[in-house]
Image (spheres, rainbow, N blue to C red):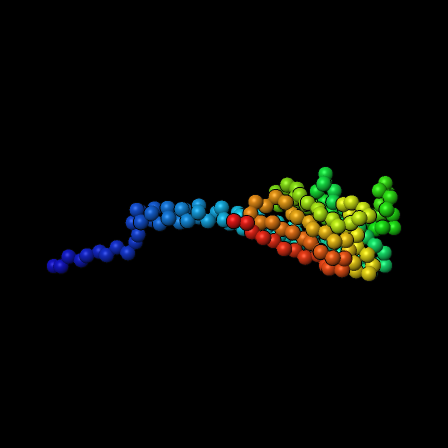
Length: 165
């Protein structure tokens, strides 16, 4: 009689544990970079929303035939679009707002550099397609600087971002 030998094709418990430990270590190393990537994507999305809000103001101005202006409300972390038909701050014609919040509800801060000799902290959009030259920085991201800018009166706003090392 011959003795039949059993060949085991299953993994041992030790092999499974070692494999799971390697996978867990790889995930632990990848998680911070994934969080950073998600945060950068969120800031880029918010910066694009700001730029689109400016484009909306320009398009409304050209379509309606009168100027609009945008102000930044720091207390409520939002951009507010007004018509210039009522420049009186006590009763402006509010037409639109853009709330600037992160997915966790924290506000996003903006820093404005406006080249406007007539009114501080307002970006004007005129029916001829011109706008106030300005540079807006989206603050708060540790590794990337997001800048929305228009260098001249007839240049549309553009989004640029630079990663710091």
